[in-house]
Length: 154
Image (tube, rainbow, N blue to C red):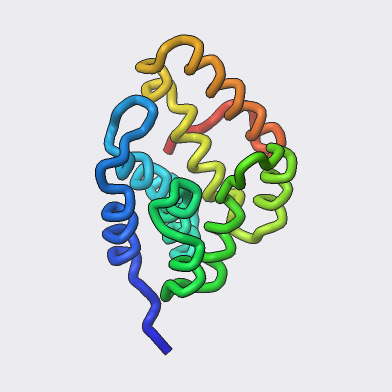
């Protein structure tokens, strides 16, 4: 059996997979991945959750394929969390939230993701309509997930 990837290897892989991508504010996408991984660690997340944080958008953004995820030297729990937090085209937010809540370890990863996405410093550089739309979207998801209404930044 292949040795599982280390967190350092997963970080390098995620950074390479998202190379050249930027977030809505024009920042390198790897900064978001790092913030989510650090948010998971700060919230007491374990190595499986930290690994999933680095990979949380990889399949959704087509940076890595579902086949790659299936074959990767990752724990089954990390794979389950990545699949849980991967939004599917046309999927209602309620269905997405239920899958996250049903997957052990996924809520912490999504909470860290939402917290970073809703960071006022990130949102303030966006145009007002985009900022308002995203603020409402993130608040709605926090509500569906049963998270408190005010995001916390680690």
